[in-house]
Image (tube, rainbow, N blue to C red; front, side, top):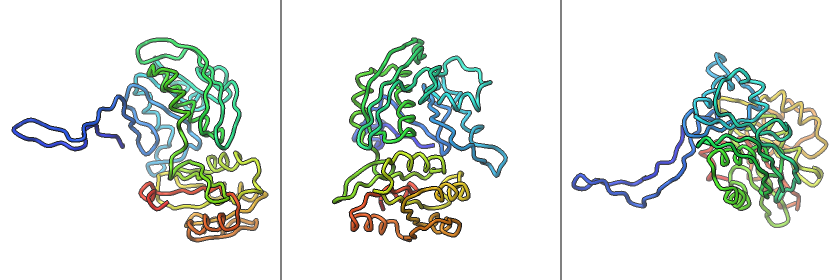
Length: 303
C-alpha cells in the first residue's frame, strides 16, 4: 500500500514536534498493487479487465478487489459490479459506465481526440459521503484519447461527486490534465507525434484499447514490449500475439516481452532490443509512434 505522509520532515526539540516544509492534505489516495484499498471515505474500482489468478492460483483479482466494499462509499464500474459483485450488499454504491444508462453516471456524448476529448456526462442519484443524493450534467474537456481513458475519467468524476467536490473544480482540474510522464501522455518530438502508454500492469485488453484509439495506423509505428516480474499479473502472450497478428501496420517489438513475442508472431515485425532506439527510429524517419510498454515503476527516471 502506498500513501503520502502529510508532514514528511519532523524534528523533536524539548518535547515539541516541529515540522519543516509543512504540507496539509485534504485528501489522500491509498492503493494496493491490485488497484484498490478497503480504507478511505470513498473507494474507487475502475475495472476488472482481466480476472487474473493470484496467491499461487488460490484466489483471483476480483476476490482481492472485493475489499473495496469496506469503504463507506464505493464508486465502481457498472459492468464490473454486475459481473463479479451482484450479490454484495452495501448502502452506498455509485456506478459509472461508458454506455449503460442505468448506471449512476454515464457518457451522453464523447468526441474523441488525441489532444483533448470533449465529454457530456449525465449523473443520477449519486450518493455522497454526507448522505446527499445529487443529479446533474457535466460538460468537460480533458486528455483522454481512448475509451479506456474516458472510463477512468468517469470513475474520477464520480468519486469527486461522491466527495461533494464542486463541479467547477472537477471541470477545471480535468481541463488542465495533460497526461502523466512515464505513464500515459502525448508529446511531439521534432516531426513525430509520440503517444506513450507505459504501465506495469498492462494487459492484452489495455493494449487493444490503446491501438484501437489510433485512426490512422499507417502513420504510426506500433511498438509493444516491456519487462517481466513487475506485477502479480503477467501478460497472456498467446492472446496478445493473436491480436497483433490481425494488425495491418508496422509492428516493432522491444524489451524482454518483445523478444518472447517475436518467437510466436507470424506477421512481419522489427525487433529492437533497446526501447530508446525505437524513439530514435521514429524521429529519424519522421513517423509517429505509439509506444506501449510494461515497465517497472522504478525505471520511470530512465524514460
